[in-house]
Image (cartoon, rainbow, N blue to C red; front, top):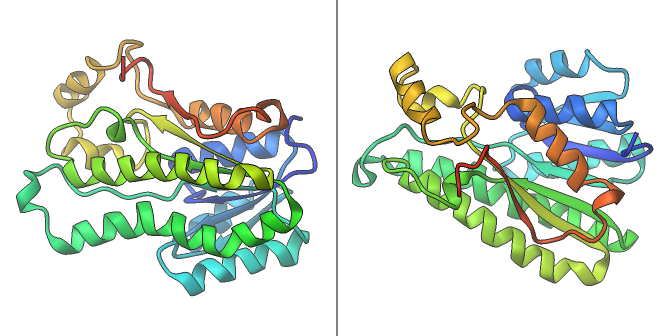
Length: 247
């Protein structure tokens, strides 16, 4: 019960890695706001647990983000943890062929959302002189794959933002870390690969020394540790949860 009495918002929490983080946080004793752009899926996920509350949010919209923060504060009175997990990608393609609308969407969801959430939540955490922020990045930001150029770049932004946030917020008792998963068994997997075939899966797996994709439970385990008091001396780290992909 390493997160006993903690309150946490998890964006993109209805499925994929986010759902794995939701399940682990609840198992460790946290109260969780399952925030997702798909409100029906958020409600379905939250209904699985007594201490989970659903919330519909567009993390790239300032008013929607503020409403999410207000919902959590209304329910709990304070917020201990935010997991910035919501993310999107563009389909694999030569960099110059990715449309401007796809580029804007990737950076709005993967990058601008972290800025908007910081604007809405950091003053609250500063007032309490405590808090944990976890950004879900990607090995794509550390060891880029061809034809995912602008997604790679967005996750490189997340990694730099994590370190910049960590050094600025440390004097206020707020820790900021990131996890960098390799491609996993999530709804985004087919988008990363372009198409989901046994041959393409085998090609992807050949780049992962441990020989398997990331699972939602892997992200839940890493996130629970980094957001717990056991990690009270850890900030600004980019934890690779990738089966050795970045070696």
